[in-house]
Image 1 (spheres, one colour):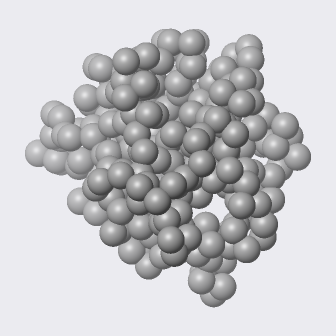
Image 2 (cartoon, helix red, strand yellow; image 1 turned 180 degrees about the horizontal axis):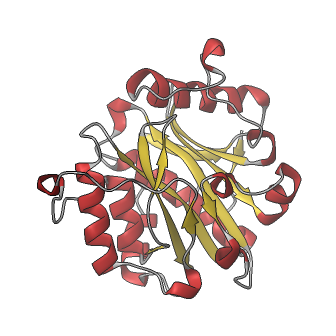
Length: 256
């Protein structure tokens, strides 16, 4: 196991702990969890579905952050982290397939893309995502990251009514300046019927956590037909994040 240096070692009082994947077996456990959540639960169309994992060409160039159950060591949460150097080897960032990233790539400093975040259904009460993000905070500090970014997804089971309502809210509360905005390659279509235009809606948990950290939304959402979601690109300037919430959120351990 490869523990994150800034985190204290796990102990018996913690139900969960976080570490970086240190072997192909660790990465496979993350990919298997991703398959169960994205394909089996949410119906995503994955090219690797026949293998019962979610795998793509970015995986070998990413660090994989895992949340494990103390005692059993079962992986119950994961996310993958792609640095500028990793993106150069992978042919770009994952989100470049959905957005024109020129403005984001022009920002000075080190960037880290966060993606494929998922939590086992039995651990969605809050502790697992908090433990995952404590590991993310340690990785950011260790690698002196200046900007954290990634796609936060909104499900489209209602045809996009909720997604468009959430975008209405985000435009008012957390829209990045034009100089930091990106352009979706496949914009979320507007409804033909004005009756389908809701004014606002609650934010999904991951997107809500990003916004509370001080993240900005870099423009309009992109339609991802394979995952049947609307993806919103969020950006956190590590020098401008909400310090009080960051301390509260990243300090959580694996206790319930």
